[in-house]
Image 1 (cartoon, helix red, strand yellow):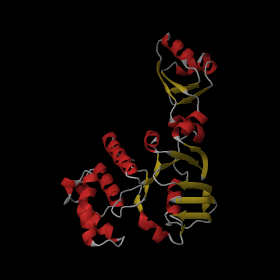
Image 2: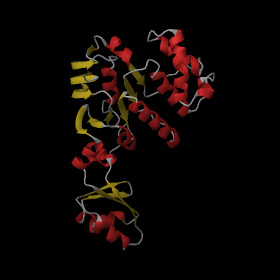
Image 3: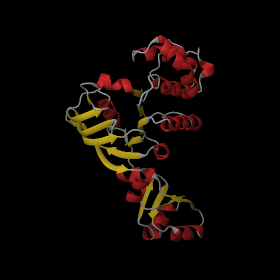
Image 4: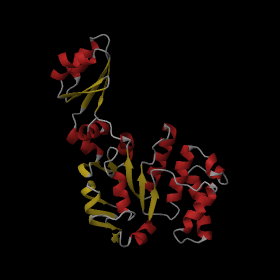
Amino acid sequence: MQYLRVTNLRKSYGNHEVVAGIDLELKPGECFGLLGPNGAGKTTTLRLCLGLTDPDGGAIAMFGLPVPGRAREARRRVGVVPQADNLDPDFTVYENLLVYGRYFGLSVDEIRRRIPALLDFAGLAARTDAKIQTLSGGMKRRLTLARALVNDPDLIFLDEPTTGLDPQARHLIWERLRQLLNQGKTIFLTTHFMDEAERLCHRLAIMDHGRMIAGGTPRELISRHIEPQVVEVYGDAAERWAEVFGRQSSERCERTGETIFCYAHDADPLVHDLDRREGLRYLHRPANLEDVFLKLTGRELRD
């Protein structure tokens, strides 16, 4: 049974169609990633799937239950990590978990039994009685994740869970998410971090302007949509070099700021030429998911 199945889902605000007929499904034990630039419709899609926003069309089933009709019942098996932390500042770390668990109808004794393991999982066992205002951003994010697990959910929704965190905190969150996957949990993840998606997700979909424009495993998306080799060229003479040599020796060259990106199946001619030139720096690397994302959604800034 699919934990989540969405068919021809639609949502508009006024004349703006935010979600434009998307289909997706989640199977038990997988991490599914939804990628897209700002305004693509990712958070609206999550809210629709959770029954927090009513759709204009299409069908949603979570654990075989129709959403939003029986969303409240379905959400008993769901944990949610929202985009912005919404911990209660008037409560301690411990009290935030205790109060949240009561929303699921758990007894106080049952929640108290679960809390020590949740705090240990979040690396907050030593901060049990701390007020929320005294926690760092990474600690708050880990507590929000622990709170989402208080009902022992089968399916966890995470909306950009590591935005605003430093690299150390991000890596710790990734480690915790991998632990959850190893325990058989299912994760629905939205993120702007392509390395996060590559590390965690079994399958991905890229969304833009309310539509799914590509899908597959990370490796499938890279092999299907982008040349395998990338050469990034920096320096005042980079644009001139691209005109004289780069564009003729690669399948595609793009400029972003002061950097020229050359995409090729064989990057050796580019690298050999750059090695002979002064005043230019370069990086030769394999193509990655960020290259695919930028090719499909464009390099222009989204607000």
